[in-house]
Image (cartoon, rainbow, N blue to C red):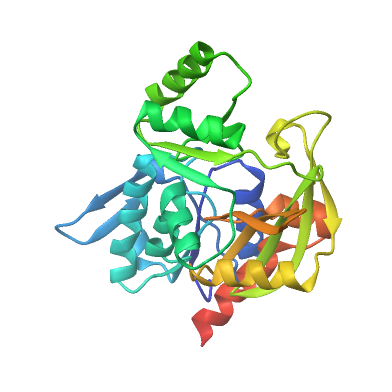
Length: 296
């Protein structure tokens, strides 16, 4: 009999999900990987069911990934977890905390309201205002409000003819009515993933861009490397992550000529970057944190 029954919410078969499930099983003797697409809520009986298992009967749930890609439906999946929380199940990180990070705009507004430095950003539904942003920025990155690993992002350059710029803006707006537009920052060939567990800084890895790729994501051919940031960069990342109360997260930071800036705080954190970049067993450390919280 397992001392604690802890379920892992993620994508079955994916490395980070299975690595976390392995860590939980090694420490508890219990393994349950939960695909939220197969979860149903019975509000009459206050049950949250997955393969005949009522998740409301577990001791804890660790959310490694709520869906393969971010979209508004992701928010609905998180709402289901609030029923488990109400039943006394500990959810790591709490559903309402993750909710504030899934939507890029919500994350950005929270960071900027707290005075965290970020790239110059405009948010609008208006084509004319978007065109002005491109002209003002020189080169602008258009980002979907729900995306990971730079998927769906595009760069629009002010040196192009006006007709082309407007055409590219309209093409982006077709799938993204609310346009999130950031000034393209010249990076030193890398940006940082700064790892935090329960608010404690564990270390940093760099994502190093491949060739002339405009972003550093592994999805675009980048690679992980160890990196030691300065104290002021660590302090900035510490302040940024503290706004969201996550149990485990990474803060995406760039070191620019005018000082460090924050791109975002992650809803789930990068296990592979932590392992390959700085040798941190994030799954094991996260599981031990959860067990400490359950025993407290």
